Length: 418
Image (cartoon, rainbow, N blue to C red; front, side, top):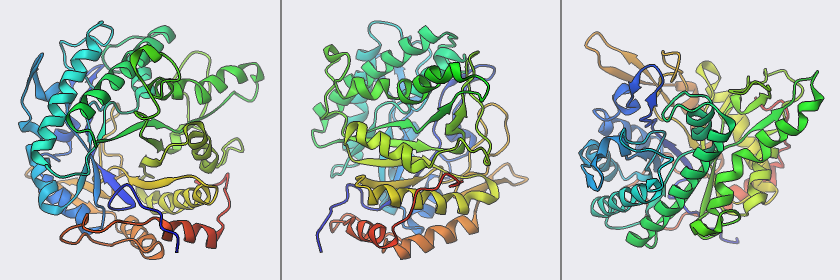
């Protein structure tokens, strides 16, 4: 059988919500604290290991570890590193997951240099915790969405509300991402870099065909502006290159299929029975062909009782993409434990485990049984591990079983996929 080496130790990944934005009406937030993931780190990583999920996205929160320009304290993430080591889970370190320090202005000329200095310090800390690879980093998560939230919608700092500021913020973040990627590689030359953006499908209102071009820009131009810069296709003076666009991650949620509105976003999600919905296969294929880099689904989840159905349907769309030549190296079931709605409060019930508050205030982890059962079913069908052994990195992991399964099943893209 032809061998196809996999980048990660397991095909199914997970991760933890780690946003640290300065939110419009609530100030600085720490989603890790809100989910009690920091104090439950050992339990949470043991849970992932028991499910055979050997890779987890985890944050090193810039606003919490930087004590001043050039001064860093990584104690807020020490429990994560210890738990990863104990349970043999390989981290993907997010260095900026929605949030910059209070004293930091993304529009300042020195922003990229300041972020790069922090990224280098974070890489040195990671190397101390994890002397042997592989090492994975996401410098800045979802630049295009961060630019919308902070540049166009005023949801989080820097609280701007214009199309021009959206683009300025996005480009400032892209430049900082490039500088940080180079700083990480200066410390760890073998580091793998994962750049993550959402998969979007945006349509004009049925009665406004004149908005088709604007909807196309929102779908096919704006979400890729940062990746184009990182790849060196635009702003070559920043030093982007295909080498830096190492691995591309695409996030997929139901609200990624939207109807454009001229007064600005966020755009409303299409209802599940809308005939304008396209197969997610189409979106994966478009993103992959644009860059030709290895990809992962970097976040995906359904809600409440639909999580198992979502996972099954999304996986079949992914298998159709593999059958069309997409170099897919993983699907990240995100988050591993539930998370609160950013703006409305309350739990989203989108994790592999839900959270239930006990009288003591402790958030008890309760696995979603149907979701776990669906994961187990696909691990068996795809010949993936169902729990981690003592050394998940001791032998190369091959993707060929997945390629062969896709060929055998011949899944067809489905516009009614969710």
